[in-house]
Length: 321
Image (cartoon, rainbow, N blue to C red; front, side, top):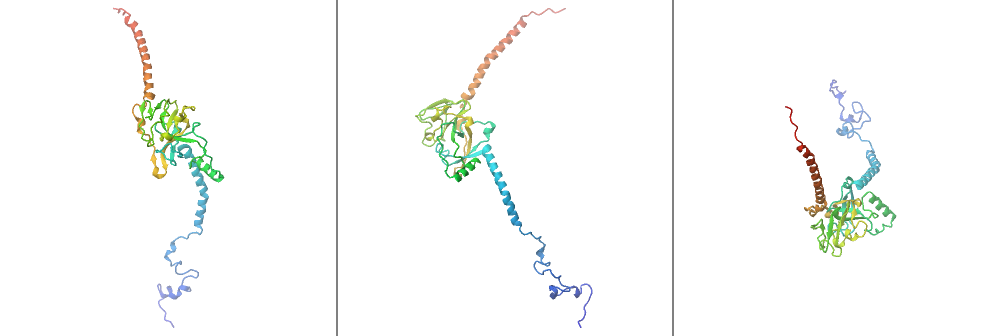
């Protein structure tokens, strides 16, 4: 007979022995696992994750991808149309300021607010007519041609069909621009100091002397590589006399964006801010206005004196006493 132990609380009948952990009286309920993963596992307090969650996120990403691409294309088109556009330099006419193959960013926003080209800016403009020959034919591969048209439409690459040029503005409407021999170029009688001109070039070409007063709302442009630039000097026999309409200007080139080692800000040279360069365009109208105002002032003064003279000659009436 096995001796009985205490039967109160905390007695041996309340504690399962080691052998009882497999189930049975005093052991764990049947059907519950013991050990790791069971109720004795301290790490079991983490909530369970539903299977297939990562694949659900992946599927939602692919659903949103077309929307993201569409938004990106619309933004690129708006930026190209109203803000900035990239252009590729196709020739050496602006060396060394711009090299063949450089990518420049052109500001297209300020013209929308009425800003006009100013002296010293590097601008991109549409062919005024007859400046460029026919562009080289685009690739004959239909797929390549379609990709090129699509990317150029949203501004990610230059168009093979557009006829655009890039030059520096030398004179604006009302300016008198002239040059003879090898230079210098003069604007309103002021000689320009042009350190941006290609090394070894002269500011002018002896066989292309010129003197022109730029019409209103037009510009006179020249390339920095003076002996390798078919600019305004070479189109003086065309309508406009070699000048370009402000309306043909796409925008100002503000920076060289590519390649990285060529990055540069295209600022306006200080020679275009020299004192007196605006004399003919700004002081002459002011002087004419002053000369025109003098006779009017004198005439008015004469009338006032005549009106006052009879009053001074009229005898005073005697006072009543």
